[in-house]
Each structure stands twice: as structure tokens, then as C-alpha cells.
Length: 439
Image (cartoon, rainbow, N blue to C red; front, side, top):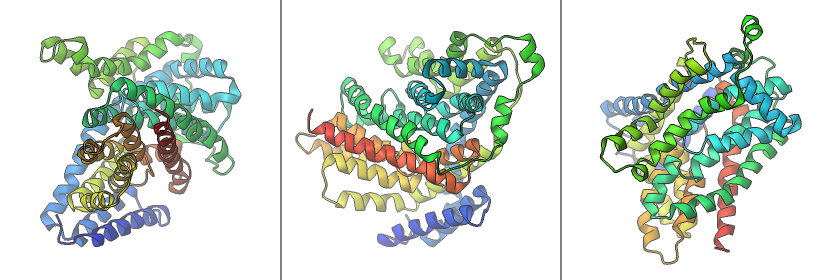
């Protein structure tokens, strides 16, 4: 805990976030370097011991990269295999045929909603982004119209719907019924994804124009004429199986205790193959057979920025700023459902992590909720999850994934992705409050 306390901590946090936005967006400074410098200066300003500042940042980077580097690397490899084999093209054609070219934005939100159920946002993103690139290329539409519905679908299930890990943790903390939580989450999540995804994306295509050439998209969609000439596109079934294999494995892993006796070899094995990294590794190996062509692919620049965002978030937590934010929220006398949302909102804005916001808020609000009669724990899972998604900005890894892959400027990412996340948060809150009046 630093020497600075109370509202001064919050003021320094606000100044740090504004400095990040201005330095990166206006002065075009390197995001990684900017995040490092601002994190160190923030720790110094709030009175953290100098030796602890770097340790805190390193712990945040290491904790984030330990997961994200493997996930992005393996997921991108799987996506590249699918793209080069024509698998992504097959998925794109089938979706376009099913929904029609005028409704590709609805196709993307639908598949993202399904694929995103058991996986972290980053995993679903790297699995689906090659499909989004191919759909955009085939239909001649903007990545805003195709990509924003995709990330909206992934984000909604990330924050609201079990068996997603964060939602499952909140279910446990609040002692909610998982069946009812899933039912209510679908009632709230489907219209939320529709509004914040396809409908919002359709509107934003009028105001956000992306460059004609996207270097990342070109790598995913480039066609080797010799391969196209000598190979037919893989079948829709085998392509869908390959891309959904990590989803299936993770789903099996998450329900391992129901399928097998805990602490047995079978139980441990199911949990191992259900680990997101192992599941993606298995799927990547399977893709060498089903898609048949292997090439290397790296994402060092993206993972560096994501890691630095994690470092900034850790400094915010270790400096005591996150605790100060929580004190403000718990000091306000609001309903438990609103409190769950508000605490998650404040932690999300401060740390950048939806998972951290949801799990931390659930831990804080659960004892309060238990003492308030008539609290609906299933609805509390939804409002907490909704709060954890609001206003993704420069300290969130998802912000940089969307920016880099969609080839957007920082300002365009705020206009599309950040607003999309905020819409999801507010709409899901309002729908859950409305649902509370009838259930």
C-alpha cells in the first residue's frame, strides 16, 4: 500500500489513465513503452516502495503473458492452418449461404455466441478472427460490420453465461443455481448481443472507415493458387469439428467432476485436456492432419502490449488504488444488484480485466448479498458480469487485440470496441433489473 490514500489515489489513477490515452492516441507513442513508463510513474507518485514498483509490474506482465502468449500463439496457429487449407473459406461460404450476404453480421454474432461459451475471450477471438477476415473479404464488407458482432458475441458469453470460467466463479461465490443462471443469462444475453453487436455495428459502419489493406487480414486470407488448384475446400463438418475441438475439450474439462470421480486419474486427465492451453495444443496438432499444411506464425508485438497492460493493472492493484475504488462503491447505499454491477465496473476500469473484475467483485459483494433477504443470486451473477465488461480501454488486453487485428487507430477502437463493451454492460444491467421485477 502506498503512502497516498483515499481520494488522492483515485485522482492519480484518473490522471494515469488520461495520460495513457493522450500519449498513445494523440502523440502516437509506442503503447508498450507508454504503459511501462506510466505504470512506473504512477507507482512512484502514489508512494509505492521503489523496489516494489518494478516487481509489481513484472508480476503483472508475467502473470498475463504466461497465459496470453501461449493462448494467442496456439490459437493463431490453429487459425492460420484453417485459413490456409480453405477451412475458413468453407465456414464463410456456409454461413453466407445460411444467413445471406446482407446478414453476415448476424451470422458472426451467432457463431461467436456458441463458440465463446466455454472459452476465455482471447481464445475465442483468435479462433474466430480468420473467419471474420474471410467473411469480410468474400462479401466486400468492413471489419466493423463483421468483427464487432463477433467480439460482442464473445464478450457477452464471457461475462454472463456459465460454463464460462468467470461466470462459474461468480455462481459459486453467490451460491447461485447454475441452471437458472444459464436460463436467465440467455434471456438477457441474446438481446444484449444483438443490440451491441449487429445493430450497433451496422450503425458504426457509417462513421468508421478502415484502411483498404489490413496486413494481418492479408496473411490469413492470402490464397496460394497451386494449393487452391490441387485441393478442394475441406468439408464444413470437419472444419467445424477442428475449430470447435478446443471448445469441446474445455467443456469436458469444466464438467470433469460430474463425469468422473474427483481426484482420480480419469478426473485429472479430463481437467488436463480441458486446460485452455492443452486444448488448443491438441486442436493445433489435429489441424495438421485435418487441414494438412503447417507453417509458423508469431504474434510477438501483440503479446508484448497485452503483457504491459497486465503490468499496469497489477500496479493499480498493488498501489491500493483498486481497494480505494472498492471503498467508494461499498460506501454508497444502493441495491445489491446495482452494487454488484458498480463494484465490478470500478474494478474493470481500474484493472482492465473482466475476469479479475467479476471474480473480485463477487468476493466483495457475496457477504453483503448473503445478509440481505430476498437477494436473487442468479441475477446478481448477471449484474456483476455485466459490470465487468464496461469500457474496455488501454489497460485491457482485449482492446489491443481488437485494435491490431482489425487494423484500427486507437480512436477508432474507442468508438467501436469500447462503446460496444459499454453498451453490453448497460443493456445487460437494464434487462436484468427488468427481469428481477418478473421472476
